[in-house]
Length: 113
Image 1: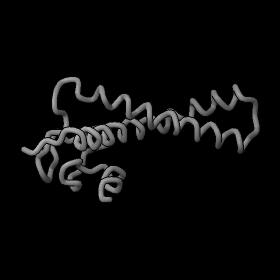
Image 2 (image 1 turned 180 degrees about the vertical axis):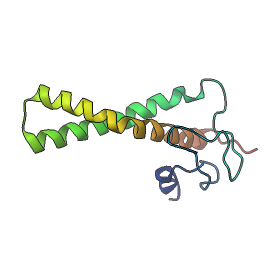
Image 3 (image 1 turned 135 degrees about the horizontal axis):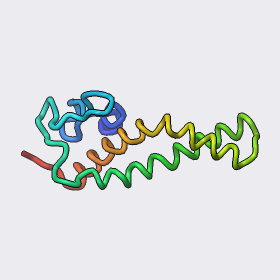
């Protein structure tokens, strides 16, 4: 029950307290609280691309739906505008895809040391 708030707050998958992100585009290499190394191996973040897709498609769909319901413009116009607006959301999708990947990986293969 504590995991979802930790994901939303961008916290470590092991201790659920340490911040994953140090800055807007900069991750901590290790958890500042428990020392967990976030990037286990080279290419580790490849799995986050699946999470990015799983988060990004619904976000784009919601943006499309909101623009369409607000304007009732032509489908193609709404799609182009929604794609443009998605660029604003893309950094958040990217950040949360890494956090979701960390937590999913931790649940499937926890590192104890």
